[in-house]
Length: 281
Image (spheres, rainbow, N blue to C red):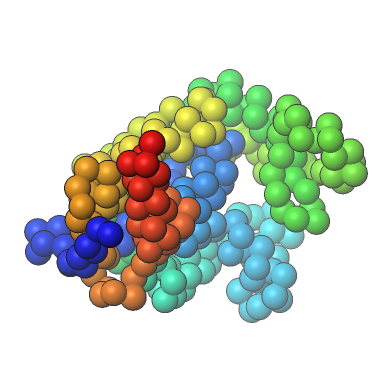
């Protein structure tokens, strides 16, 4: 049986979990990609749109302010959105597990609010798709009002679920005029992204298949020092009789940050079994 040694990171490496900011134009696939990355790395998913919907559903004072703004045909203010995001990122799960944020910031003012809150991302991913793709995707984008899940009319699974297809709706923000305005806002903001997040921005094509996009982003994330121990565990298990586990810096209780969908302990056990089977063959 292999010996398992638990060691902390060397001082030169970050002892904090990853904080990933996902940016891009409308309908670039940010929500879907964020969900898959959060599941893969066991990060806390923070969606600005979901936070707003939760506030409205819970009938909070902030939610009521948002409703009043929207009824007047106004955008929810940067201040209101910023406060919601600040409170969510300040919660324990985000501090311990790390986070992936999508849907905020949408403009320079919101980016500066995030900076003032000292919620600094370790990695910024910019999904890029053409303007034609933005409008085409938005045109075919539908939402299930019962679950909040987003679908494309091109998806094969809708053919097998006619009851779901029948209740899908188009959100106001996906109407052509609204998309045109959102795209303009993004282009204005994109000019400032490099300056605001200097040295942290990685452009990724969002026009590939979703899984290909996720794999590309995963390679970028794992190339950072913040996930050094993922490669360390895999390398040691497959090539040596010694396993070295690194942690985010929260001691032996932190078993939640490996690329696999299992905890690190499960990953160790699984790879040990695989190695044992290979030896038998």
